[in-house]
Structures are given as structure tokens and as C-alpha cells.
Length: 498
Image (cartoon, rainbow, N blue to C red; front, side, top):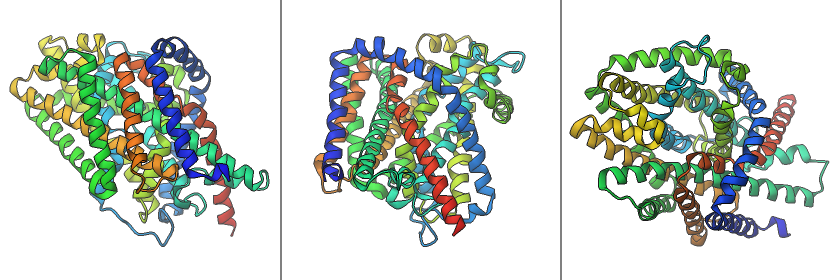
């Protein structure tokens, strides 16, 4: 049967992704002038309702964690734990969003504190509200969305977790409505759209990360050619994530993820040694308090918390469609590495732990940078307003030789973080398309395609465009996600009755 052919699915998806990348390279103005306005209109229409749904899902996973359902095992009662706790936490965090924390660690809270999008009568301290708004974009809601994907694809019901089959929950509600041939075609379409969502979601992150890496090479080594430095960076990343993906889950992805975590916490400790700690504590406490206020009440009516409700289209709602784009691969990946763990532990590990690390990371980086700028008038905030990628380097340059170490360590961490996300994505894309590990052309094909599209966006040097590209596949995937949730609930209720 044609649509049951896994080779056809992978070749079709790979061909279309490469064609779209080449078209973007040949006709870059089309991306900016035609694509972005369409995406902005869709975000204006769908952003707020989807964010309310994410609020509901956050509450739902917390309820599941403390309910009797939390005692069930991921993957069923016979499943066994494959990875130790540290390795498991390292992989889920690195795959989920690690590279973005380097890019936005200083820039985003600083931007929001200079010109706070939140109403001052509700949130009076701009620095605290800036951190709180950043945490809304990167914190518990985002990780709850990932957690739901993992549960739907390998958690509470036997049907939903069939080998991480992303189409199984949707097919369960189409039984009796479609013929067997119709279900095969539906499965093909679901997996194809999921691959698109994963591919372009990761490409957006790859492009943003290379912008920061390129700026680092320009500042530290004087390499000003975007084409040359971009080619070097993309090539290094492609080689790194291809080798990691080829080595597999334990030898490649887990090893890189552990290295990521070690470097990340070393950066935090090093920074705490050389900068005043009180501004960081003040930022963390004020920002966390405002964040709690937002997630307990404000995010349910988010537009009314903002001076301009349309601001959310370019930031918060855009982020959540980006997380939705990552959802298929992060969900399949989480379901794969979390087998055998109690559901309550899975939810705490996927939602609570990364949220706490995110609060720590943004508090340390933004709190220290903003306080340093206020005390020394070093131009950090002005640099960020001019170019998102400059804030990290301008701040670290103030710290002498210690700052030079921090710059290179941050660039290394970013390089490894983005490679870890990409190799996890390739692993899941190949799993969705039915590729076997023996098919080397498949691994190299997806690796080159990701690198090619990332390079196209890097040359454009347009961060908002990167965010738009990242959610191309997520918008159509929203329909599939809603059907997955319905199928999951149907299967869960059916199993509960029996």
C-alpha cells in the first residue's frame, strides 16, 4: 500500500523540507514580506485561546501528579527504568530548550525591564516584572506542554503509548469513521505534519543560536563575514549533532547532555563568584513573586495584564506555538527516556525541575547584568536594545579575563546545547518516518537539510523571522494536537471503565 510505505514518508518529508529551504534561499524577500504577515494574523486569531488551553494543561498535569494516576508507570507496569536520574534530567532539559537560555538569558528580561509590556499598576517593579514575563514564556507552562505530549505518547494509556506512535491517539477516535485505508492515509498525514513541525521548530532554534555564535566570533576573533563565519558554525554544529545521533541515545545524546549540565552550572557558579550576589537574590525573589501572581491569575486573562495585548503575538503566543512545534519530538523523546518511572516523578522531573533551573538561570544572568549596568553605566541595556546578541558579550567584557573565560564557555555551551536538541530531533524524525538505524543516507540527509535551512536563515540575520519560521509547522499541527488530546481522553476513559 502506497501510504503505508515508510520509505515514501521519509523521502517525501525530506524532499519537501529541502525544497522549501532552497526556495527560502532563492527568494528571501518572500519570507519576510509574505510569510510573516500571515503568521501574525494566525497568531492574533489563535494565540490567546491556545494559551488558555496551555493553562488548563498545566493544572491538569499537576492534578495528575498528586492523584492516584500519579502512581502509574510510564510505558505500563512492566516497563523498567533505563537511565539514571541525573542522565534522565540532563537529557530532558537539554532537548527541551537549553540553547534558548543562552541566547535570551540576559537579553529577554533586560528588554522587558526597559519597556515593560505589563501594566505598571499591576506590576510596579519593571525588573521583577521583566523576569516574571520571561518566566511565563520559558517556565512551567512550556514544560507542562512537553509533559502532556510525553503522557499522550507513552504514559497513562496503553493505546497512546504504542511505540511512541504519534498518530495512535488520533486513530483511536477515527475508528468506525474511516476505513482501514483511510486510517493509513491519516497516519501518513499526521506523521508528515509532525515531521514538518519538528524540522522547522528546530531550524528556528538553530538559526537563533548561530546568530549568537556568529556575534561571538565577530567580537572575539574579528570574523566579520556572515557567510564565512556562518558556514564554519553551521558545519561544526552539523558534524557534532550528526556524530551524536549516529552514536545513539546512551553514548551520544546522554553524554552530551551531561556535559551541557556540567558546563551550565559551572557558568552559574563562576558568575556568582565574581559579581555581587544581592542584586541576583533581589531579582530572583521579586521576579518569582510576580511570576507566581501571573501564573495563578494573570495568565488566564493575559491580554488584560498587558499595556498592548498585541504584544503577546510576537512574544508569548509565538513562543507557545514554538513549543508546540517542538512538542512532537520532545514528547516522543520524553516518552522514550522516561519508561518505567512513576508518572508523578515524570511530571515533577519534566515540569518542576526545569522551571526551577530556568528561574535560577534567568535570575543570575539578568540580575547580575542589569545591576552591573546600573552601577557602571556600561551600556549593556543599550546594546541589547540595538542587537539582542550583544548583551551577553558586552556584560562579560566588563569582567576582565574572567569574562573572556565566560564568553568562550557560553559559546561552547550553546554549541553543544543546540547540537543536543538537533540530534534528539533527528532521532525522533527518523523514528516517525520509520527509518532504520542502518539507513545512513537518512541520518546524513536530515543532518544536511537542517544545516542548509539553518544557514539560509543565518544569512538573513533576522531574529523575528527565525521565530516565524519556527512555528510554520506548529500552526497546522495544532489541529492534530487537539485530536491527540481527544483520543487520549477517549482511550483513558475506556480503560478506566474496564
